[in-house]
Image 1 (cartoon, one colour):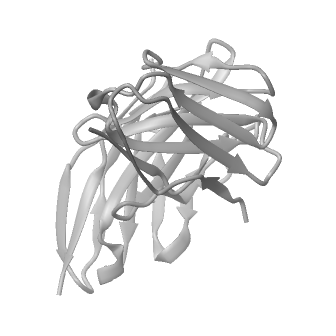
Image 2: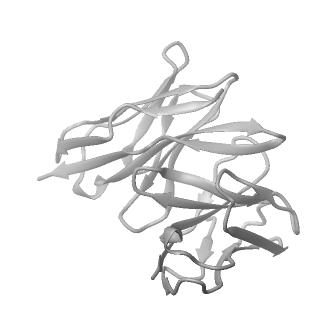
Length: 113
Length: 115
């Protein structure tokens, strides 16, 4: 079974703090993704990575950065957290071949106060 | 352009009755299609996937979906709802953009199951 794990289920941070969200997958997947999920807005892609040290912007990259130093690990970084980044963050991974289904982690619910 | 429309934002059924969650898609080529389920405060779990091998796709927990190209639909069904089926369901299409493969998510359908 594919397993995608995220470092925290719930996180509370203060405005201006630097926040790291970690994601690890154990299936040697090439691609990894970070989404945020908000009521009424669905899932929106923040960043994705198709290889170690490679990254591509998704639909809403502003205020975020990512790091992928090892194939199994993909980190999302909030350089200076703001209240509008309070959200559910979901990590996913997949193989780079048809049908490209993605496997999701359990999510991190981040609250910025 | 690729898009996914889930026709109902909320569906309510009684336990033991059939479930139908409707999804229409738009794709410029033969798509891969998926249904995911999300229970409260959990990640998304893959229910089933269509990859052109067979138009009727069986998934986990008794769910199935039928790909109808002429209607551009991929509706999710289950013969008999269980209380544990209460969750949010997402219809998803896979597409290629800028050399990378991405997913487009529908807005979701919240399924309520009543005793």
